[in-house]
Length: 217
Image (cartoon, rainbow, N blue to C red; front, side, top):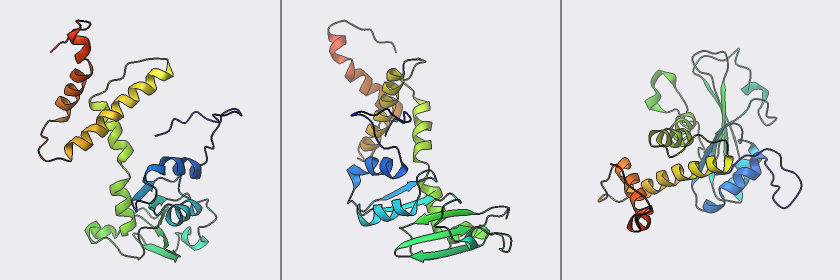
């Protein structure tokens, strides 16, 4: 993760906050792994998806803002198109899709370097959604899921000091990541609440031995 602190003054800690630069920094640990990255329309651009595919060997799927110059005009005009219709364009291993939902007032535009055909997901029924859209909907919720899990067992306290707020966030995310790794082994059966409690007890174990803190059940 990165903390977005707005535009920074000139100096050694100033970084480029453009979407391409942010994504490039965040995917550095998985570059070359062949994994897929899903992001929303703040990040999605054709140059970014091209770079991830060619340089980092990563596929990507993302919604595209309709003011992007790479979108053909016919992909934006929905007046003559039927409801639940899709339009595809393929270019050098990158697919552009425009889908008109049931309302027909606007369309959804996505770019994907993972999908190379115009397949419609049969499980979407009468909605006739392209595979690209159902895949995006299935994988876009990572941040939302983390927020939900952190809210269930939250370490944070109200504070006006932003370093403390960042610290609490790191604690929440660290316990979630640790539990994901823990759960990959089938023999590990602890529920997340008890897993977090066991971590807490281990962290204060030395202080308990010295009698510097108390525990409450």
